[in-house]
Length: 124
Length: 214
Ligand SMILES: Nc1nc2c(ncn2[C@@H]2O[C@H](COP(=O)(O)OP(=O)(O)O)[C@@H](O)[C@H]2O)c(=O)[nH]1
Ligand SMILES: [Mg+2]
Image (cartoon, rainbow over all chains, first blue to last red):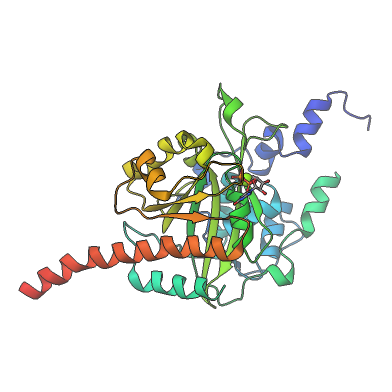
């Protein structure tokens, strides 16, 4: 292989540029993504990574041996949150991960939840 | 391709992993202008080294010169630092440091909608940078407190003066904060939690009253 003469293009691939993101998600946009995935949705693997899997899917299964937030997955994979949301949606569809529901506070949060957070912070 | 294969082993160290029992996650958003101390505050209280999540804007916007979160290599990427505090075996708190410009808030689905509340971090040398943020949070019904990050070269402003300058509602708490200090940052978060708790008690009270009359 000759090195790419177009430095910008290869750089963009390496750095998570648009071309690479397009390949990782198979060109899907928001249609491939479950709407209930939040930055702090906790993801847990329910199956082991398989050799034939897309590398990003396999990485998610490996790193989610213990619960991990969508934001952390995005940080470790160095991929935008929206791309991670599509990848996790794929894994949810094949039941290889489960998600632990985010507390959706409709307005003011529950006092008991707030008390628990305060108690935890006081121990810091 | 090196960068691709090196991704395969990424993830948290065992030390940075949550317990298997972690079941619920909540978040607080720290919002403020560039250099106001958001990442510092998050890092002061976080149990993990602050991490960065990013989001890509679908279109290149003009006037990105005021957007310091945008990385040089890609003008359409906005970064957000975050940290984590394990509250107990089941409950995890995440803290997100978010740029003040509202158009970025929509890049991350539910950033504010699902949040317990927000801390508006304010630098008294640039108070005007906070007007917009505060207005947007009020409009969006996001409960928040204001934390004044005291920089040594900033003129000393009594909190009452800052409250007046920001035209804050008298019920919104305003506190002083040194984002570099773990204790001060923790106390800032506790001030937000106490405020949220008082709001939750108030919102529960009318229901209790109406139940009593039935
Ligand atoms: N003196 C002082 N400096 C601070 C404080 N908080 C942050 N800084 C410094 O201000 C700079 C910008 O802080 P940073 O957290 O990166 O701001 P961000 O852009 O809001 O994330 C850093 O050099 C910090 O060390 C503070 O409370 N007091
Ligand atoms: Mg920062």
